[in-house]
Length: 151
Image 1 (cartoon, rainbow, N blue to C red):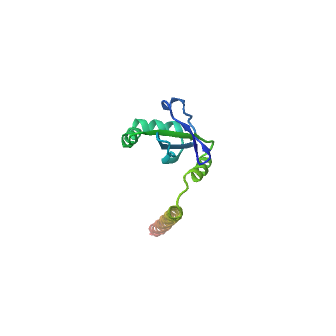
Image 2: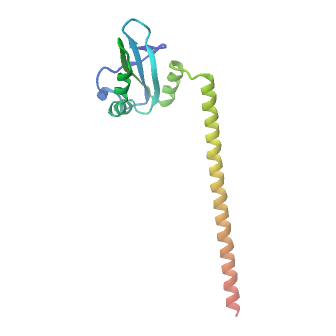
Image 3: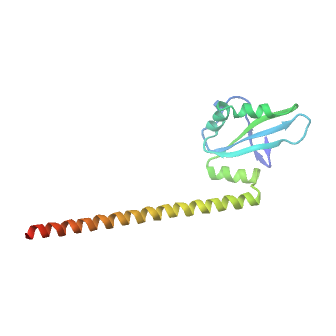
C-alpha cells in the first residue's frame, strides 16, 4: 500500500512473517465507498515483529477494530528499514509533525540534555567534596597520630 509515495506492507495474517528489524508500524482506516484511506497512527519501532505482536497481545488491535464504522476496514501497515534513523526519515515524509509540535519536541530535547548535564555536574561536585573530606580526614588522622607519637 502506498502512503504519501512510500510503500508499506498490509498485515494480512499474524506477525510470524514479520522481520525483527527497525521500521514503522501504523494503522490505516480504509473505506469501502472509495474514499482515500486515513492514516490513524504511525510510529518508529526498534523491532517491527515485536511491536505488532505486542499490539495484538495487548488488545490494541482489537480496540481499533471496535472503533471502526460500518463499511470501514482497519489495517495494520508495516515497513522494515535497516536503521531507526531511516525509519524516522520515512515517518517525517509520511506523517510530518506540525511545526509547533516539532518546536515543542526540540525544546523538550534541549531541556532533557540540560538536565542530564546538570546531573553530571552535581555528581562531579559531590565526588570532589567527598574526596576533599576524605583527604581532610586523612590529614587530621595523620596529625593526631604524630601528636600521640610525640607523647
